[in-house]
Image (cartoon, rainbow, N blue to C red; front, side, top):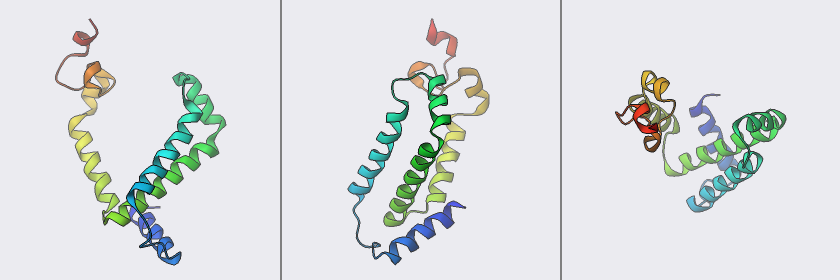
Length: 127
């Protein structure tokens, strides 16, 4: 499903339920935080390899997290009058400028404090 189509379906869902004017941004943001917290509880305090194993064994729960979070983000987009596909494209354009693949392959991350893409050589950051 395309993002625009999903955003439209969520708007229709809200209208059908009589919820299109019954919302507040704070509660939706808190609900997103709750979803992130539930997901985090699956993977907290374990290393990368164990995280992959946990997700593999809990694929349905991880999928629910993605679906619930996307639903809430698209609902927020509707209520703020924001085209989420435009927002995503703008973010992707910005990331492509800030984190070009040829640089990211060299440094492995974009964390400036750890020597990411800030026009410094990675090796100079770890010495």
